[in-house]
Image (tube, rainbow, N blue to C red):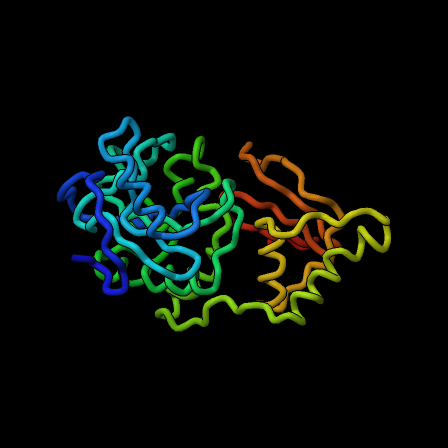
Length: 271
């Protein structure tokens, strides 16, 4: 019954039947939960309620994929629209993928197994449905729930490896998925992360595990980009268009985090 051969079928009735061609793929974060099967069960529990919800697929941290709605139908995951660029009911022309994240801010990074499963699923969906394998434009592509509802879903999917996804798709799915840091790399990263605050200021270092921290480690391990230790903690600000961003200053760069993506700037501009 499933559209994707590696998925487990766990259906619900929260969908628009035979809703037509799908032109966009929307990525989500669950902001809670521990497994794809648990989220699928939650969807089933909302059938007939005042707030029925669903997504086409769910990918959990172990790499398990569950399909709950057929691709020919429209899952009820993108119904509230606060971005006027999305016309009509996006549920009818999108396919949605939930990524299980245990924290309510969707700040948790994808596990290696989750990322590998998600990337392969995304590629397969796009190829079979003729969806552009790129950041969404006016006609097709891939984006996050934040694009449809930037008011209420600005942190959905939250921390997500967008750059790695584009590289993976651009290379036909052959780009190695994000390297898992070794124990030695993790220790060196933590030593550097704490160095300025603990050794120079004598204060507790900024917390780890945030989206900025994960991006900082990933760029160091996977790209050889080292921005130096943090010299401030995270703080709220806004970009030049007035949008909310979270910022953190580093010895050699500044990070601006928005809609699950980390943007790095040096003295010479965007990195």
